[in-house]
Amino acid sequence: MMFTRTAIPDVIIIEPKVHGDNRGYFVETFRGDKLEGFLGYKINFCQDNESKSSRGVLRGLHYQLPPHAQTKLVRVIQGRVLDVAVDIRKGSPTFGLHVSVELSSENKKQMLVPRGFAHGFVVLEDDTVFAYKVDNYYSPECDRGIAFDDVALNIDWLVPHNELNLSAKDKVQPKLAETNDLFEFGVDYYCV
Image (tube, rainbow, N blue to C red; front, top):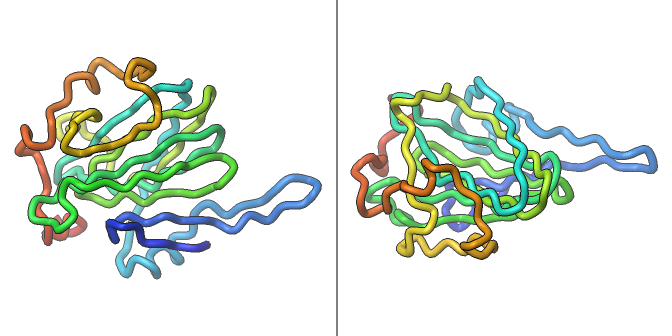
């Protein structure tokens, strides 16, 4: 497995080694010991989630507040998405900036989205299956979001706005500057 820090160093791209031959392929998609060795701290994933979507579906930008904040390890099993992580840690030198990467069944890349980041993705192919691990259980009372189209975030979703398919919830999320439900840079949300 290869681990690469992005322009926002806490967001990690993981590229597993694919062993393929005329029969197909084998890939190890998760190794806790290797990930924790790279990060320098322990992550206890407790829940796996999966969604199937058609082209143009945009899910996000979502996050959960403490004490139910989540780290996500995301990947695509079938199809393609543009995956986005936005730094929402007040006081961070990268506050309001984002990382975006194409994840696909072909490239097998994964993205680690740590606590303190909003996460979203847009589907680039029909019948895309998206899967992710989280290190804390879903909590409706801690569920929050940021507007996907907040111009201050300057995210190019690669799909024209009129072709996007959003949930009712995601159509009315506040802009980053309009919410006080954020994280503080420098706080260890793994010990909170």
